[in-house]
Amino acid sequence: MAQPAPTLELGSEARGFRKYVPHPGHPRVAGLDQPDVETYSNKIASCPEVVGVFDQWKAQLNEPFYGITTDGQRKEGLFGIDDEGAPVEKMVAAAKKIQTVLSEEELRLVSHEIDSNDWRKWSNPEVVIFKYGVRLHTLCPQKIHAILKLVEASLSEAGYGKVVAAMEVNHFLGELVNGALILNRHSYQFALYGVPSTTEPWGFSLTGHHMCLNIFIMGKQMTISPVFIGAEPNEIDAGPQTGLTVCVDEGTYALQLMQTLPDQLKQKAQIYSELYSEKMPPGRWNPYDQRHLGGAFQDNRIIPYEGIKAIDMPAAQQKILLKVIASFLVLLPPGPFDARMLQVKKALNETYFSWIGDFGDEDPFYYRIQSPVIMLEFDHHSGVFLLNTAPAKHHVHTIIRTPNGNDYGRELLKQFRGNMSV
Image (tube, rainbow, N blue to C red; front, side):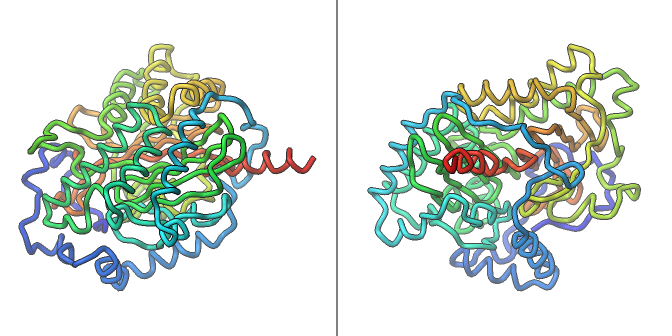
């Protein structure tokens, strides 16, 4: 779990994770030797400092879904039913294959109604707060392969590579901290929503530590959000996968954008110069999400715009901004990717970019890109399993949200049902 705010000078731990790997038996990794994730989760969930947080998250989950907004009021008319060229035939075939290889009991555990509230039970911590679906590591290789083939069929080649990289780096982390039973490439929950169909709405989720994927499909259209992808550390530096990295482009392109903005815009975009600041209002930082605002159980959060407008940037910086956005949306297959980027471009007149922290080459930072149709967040975190107490570039979190009611494809589902009732 996350640690308290540090008092160290920020930026002093930005590079090199090896010196922060805890030795076996260190309090930071105590409990990772538990025999299974359920025992581990129960132990963590009983800690007094965690109970209140989990209770708050559960209370937020019990609120009816509304969606992230800037002022508490959803903007209407932003999303419509369309043919975006989603590879639905391949996705349906892959989903039906899963249904044939799972046992009757596994299929019962996996299957949910399309508008089930279980969609909203995802969370990033390694702790299992809610059980839904089946965990990959409880399945045989054939069944795991079938589930991953659905993920592959639903994403671009680069997007699937990104998801698998996050899972592999999670396994690498487990080996680093002697916690491979809890942190591994298969420590994720899979669930199906609705009935796989080329015409009817359905979807699936694959969620766990540092990789939470929610995909809604309706005909040739799809929504991928909420998505959480991160890594601690964000590279593998030993073994056959040496050099594998996670979420590098998102940081590189954004830093390039910030560094090349005109000074006046740079100052306005930087809403706080320090990652931990007494100037931040209550709730702007917390020990679990740190600077993130759109994390797990934040489906209805009011998040006002901050920073600068995209249309106020010079043309060159607008192009870099679009590269940043594309580095998140690379998950999408070609047709939906093009449709989403077009949607993003049409909303540039109400797209905001904000930054927290410094912007030297070695400085950790946070940024958010927010418009009526998309919200993206990137944050460098302090150590959870590693021992760095200040945010470092080797621990990265990223989030994709679709504000104004279309996370989990809810707005498209509402429109589909409205059309069916006419």
